[in-house]
Amino acid sequence: MMYDFDDSTTDVLFLKEDEAIYRARCSEEKPKHECIYRLIDLFSGAGGMSLGFSKEFGHPFQSVWANDFNGFCVNTYNKNFGPHCVQGDIVEILENGGFLIPQADVVIGGPPCQGFSLLNRDRDNDPRKKLWKPFLDVVARSGATVFVMENVPQLLGTLEHSEIVKEAEKLGFKVRQDKLLAADYGVPQTRTRAFIIGCRFMDPSVLFPPRKTHFKDMGKPLQLQLPFDETKYLPGPQKWRTVRDAVGNLPPPIGTEIRKVPPPLDLHFGRNPTDLSKKRYLAIPEEGMNRFDLQRQTPELTPPCWIKKKTGGTDLFGRLWWDRPAFTIRTEFFKPEKGRYLHPEQHRPITHREAARFQSFPDTFQFTGSKIEIAKQIGNAVPPLLAARVADVVRLMLDRNYGKWMSSQRKKEVGLCRA
Image (cartoon, rainbow, N blue to C red; front, side, top):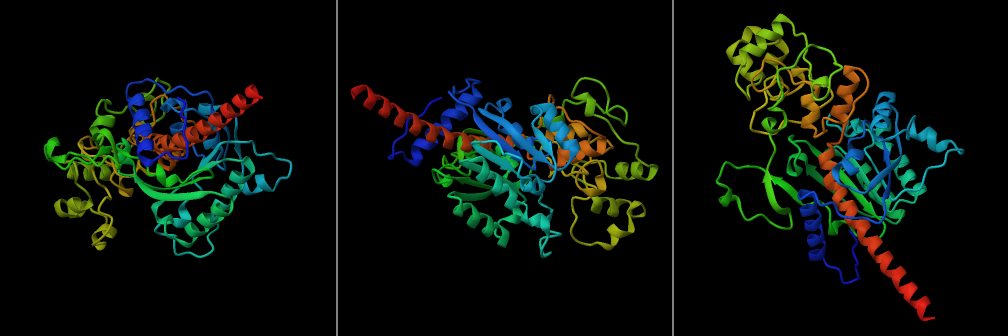
C-alpha cells in the first residue's frame, strides 16, 4: 500500500488509513508495499515483539539483528526468525569497537524491567534501570527513525522515564508513551504494559496509542454498549477474548514432559502434584475461587502464611473464569500458589500451551529449551497480538514518511525530465 501525503494531512486522514489497514487485515487483503522495513529487536527474549511486527501478523518488517543475554531465548528466536540473534551483554557488545550495528528503520525491545517492579522500584542505583541507555545507543548507531520501548507500567512517571524522554529528544525524536491493556487488542489476558514510542519525522501522538479492537463486555445488550468512540476504537470492535476462546478446545493434558508430537499437544502437559495439592484443588472446585475460599471451606488445608496474611494476594491459588480473559501470565504460571493459574474446572494448573495461547502465541511458534526455560520465555514475552497493534502505528508512520519521500522523488524526476 502506498500513501501520498502533503503537509495538510490531518488526524482524520490518519484514522481513515488506520481503518483501511484494519479492514484489509480482517478481509485477508494484505496491503502491498514496495519496501520492507528493517527491524532490530533488543532484549528480545523468545521474540514475541518481533513476531507481532512480522509477516505472520501481516506486517512488512524484517528482523535483521537481535540480542538477548539468555542463550535459550536466543535459540528460540533464531529457530523462528533466522540465525541473526546474538547472545551476550549488550553493553559489552557496544563497547567492542569491532562490532558494527546494522542499519535499521525501527528498533524495538523491552529492557529488563525488574528494577521498575513494585518490589524493586524504591531501590536506588539498580543497574537494570539503566539498560535503556544501550537501547538508545543502538537506536542512534542503526540510524533508525522509529523506536518502540516496552516495559512495566510502573516505569511511566519515574525519574528514569523522564531521562529516557530527555535523551531521546536529544537524538531528535518526538516521544509519546501510554499504558496498553492487552485485552483491548484481542489478547485473552488482562496484562497491562507501558510503551514508549519515538519518531524522528513526526509526532507519534497523531497515531499512538493504537485504537482498540476489543471491548470489555459489561453484561448489557450490545446495542446499549454502542456507539464506540471512533478516536479510541476501530470500526466493529469485538468483545474481549476469553479463556474459553483461547483454550476451550484443548483436551486434558497428557504426561508431565514436553512431547514429540505436533502442536498444540507438544506443550500441553501436566505436573505431578502432591496429595496435599490435589486436596486443595478439590476444595475449591468452582471457577473464580481462590485462597480465601480455600481458607473458608478447609482451613486445615490452608498454609499458615496465607491465614496470617489478611489482605493482598487475592489471586493466589485462584481458578480462572471460562468467560473472562486470563490474568497476567508470569514466568511461574505452572505454580498455582503464585497467582490465578488454576484451570476453570479441571483440578490442575494451566499448561505451557495454555499459557502460550493466553499470550497470543500461535501454535506454530517453536519454543526451545527445558520446561522451566520455555515457561520463562512465555511469561516474559510481549504478547505478539498486542505488539502487532503497536506495529500498526509504526507501519503507518513509516508509510507516511515513505509516501512523502516518493512524492519528493517524483517531483525531482519531473524536474529532471523538464530540464
